[in-house]
Image (cartoon, rainbow, N blue to C red; front, side, top):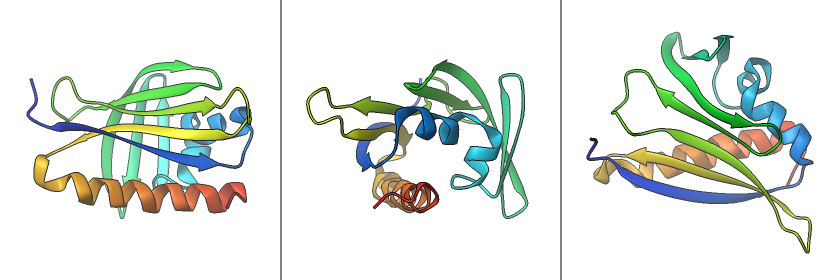
Length: 127
């Protein structure tokens, strides 16, 4: 089992869950904010940043609700998940991220997500 620490962060996103989900699960959507390019074949996703490739496996997904990936080269038992939560009263849409990082890299990982989600909000036209 991994010695990485699980962390969770939440972002309010002004988008419909259906539209947001397309940016979390499709290669074209993920290419717009998460990586420079994304290719997929079945459950295998290849994320490309600055020419370097990282392979992930799609573990679970539920339409308009969440997607969970595991890095092929990552520690066993770790994953990253992007969950869409809609507040029943206000109807506000939130993106809830669950990820794992080494203890001394959690702040850096959160900052990376902050930057990625900022790009996502820009693509969606959200504030």
